[in-house]
Image 1 (cartoon, rainbow, N blue to C red):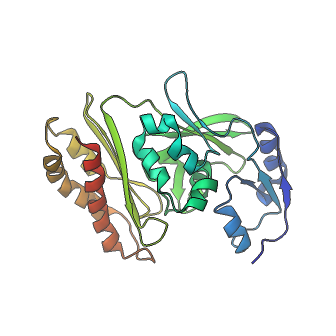
Image 2 (cartoon, rainbow, N blue to C red; image 1 turned 90 degrees about the horizontal axis):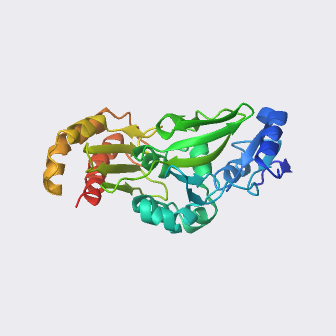
Length: 287
């Protein structure tokens, strides 16, 4: 099936892209990697009269370290580029590993991080890990630029806090301390995860765990009981002992998740996967 005809715009800079969206309103959408949008247009699930191709706008691709040490990933950076970027591999090896395993090679080469975040399909990998890493997004619109934590960006299935007239320009992650480790583990019967769990563990003072489950519900979900239990653990426990102490809290968190039966599995099955994957992600973070 072919997409309905539309006007294709290729703005030269960010200001022109924002102006085009303001001019055409709901009849227009931004186009980045297109791995989600083009499929939806061809299936007539979505229809736009104007498509604004932002791929040539300078400054929206690549990874850099800012003056304050934060890692800034341009919204148009592909999953493959992130997986092989030396900054990401050195500072965030867990996120590089996640990017190496996104979907398939076509999606990794063309799909962008900003695109997957803005499309907000629940069965995605990156949002869960970015929540665990306390990352934030940078949005630009007619009123200027604003920042928003990733954990507040996703509002529901295919819904985000991005304004209709805003463009996501970057995803940023605070400098990682020497005692920080992160990992992501997922499982699914298709190229999309049925469930994914991301863990970020810090042995610096104070000891802290950030643990999130994704794909199981409309938005990434914080496993708060497990995080609270981890804060009370001695800092010299071996990995097996850490998991033994945290298992009941993780199971209780999983039981509270509003999971649904779908083609990715039954609700109870997916809640069980949360515990299995949490154990694997946590042990990958621990010495």
